[in-house]
Length: 211
Image (cartoon, rainbow, N blue to C red; front, side):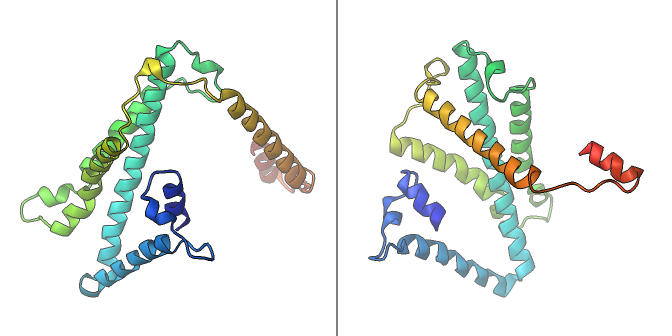
């Protein structure tokens, strides 16, 4: 419910989900999320185990598509940095394997999605439910992306036009504050309040040295 409400507030979901009661209860989001409970009745005829497998298939494919989207985002980010002459080694985090690692993850995520339900294409192995649950997210993802692009009318940004400067000072300042707070928290609640016991044997001594 909170996620749906947050998406609507950010403009990534219909504004109807922002409707609340007099007490501030987001009832539209609650009704929408509660409606998914009726999926449990699918187990009446097919069994809970089989239905769980269907939902697990869809969730797994959706997760892989999410990672594929992250890879595409980084590849675009990398191309923008390269086109504008930025040195990635000066970033707080950088990897020498990029962008090849992102391409590797993207290709294999797509291949896993593509062959996730390969058994249904074998002779006498066709099962509609298995095909739909394995390949519906794969077909729905580009449809939703293109639909969102057409609805919001946001063009693709060229690599040389990507903005890496706006609000960078505020972001870096916020990052420094968070880093200092995290360091203070770790130092206060872990290092200052915990005295590691002395090792009783060579195995424990090796473990303490290792970690």
